Length: 267
Image (cartoon, rainbow, N blue to C red):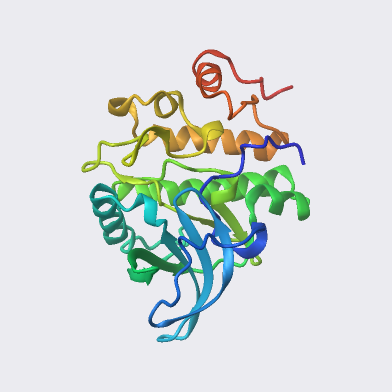
């Protein structure tokens, strides 16, 4: 598989397929009432994801809990707003949110949300392992695009459409994960910068539109997700991304996104 090192999202997928490593003890909860915690299945910049079983109703879920160091009042307000909005999203291509609350960890109250557990693989890996034809790959992307369109119609921009954030289930159904850096299109104008660390980009650089990567707040809209879908489609069909970025050289990477034409698809 020919993929760049930064093509996996900083936000962990809600599946055990890609996890390796140990939990962050700053974030690991001793207990979440109403849930049986099974194991850590992912870690990212914003939090840790666990496999768990909800007691009532009894079902397998993925629980994401935010890191204590990110819990500013602004982030808590954004988190609460996103849970309220996303809890009403019902689409076969979007992983459902079941519940939200807070848990005690080392004496600190940390918000979490529980959502549908997806047993599957990231979309690029799924296509490779199942040796999908071009038509089958396009059909997958079409389903993803319909889910993104549905979210846009509800006023939500994902802002981190990447292969790691789209799992394909064992039944072949793609599921869009982790709206953790999404925003309500009409209410949240803090698009690119993390509220606790000015200058830190939220999202995955390789798939960012020029407007998002450059921090042009007023210009980021639903087209940001459409751009990312284009990048994802290119990678899915061509087997590589249209250009390479060095995530350690942020200024150079942003200049590449703004100034360098992507590799022609026919090549």
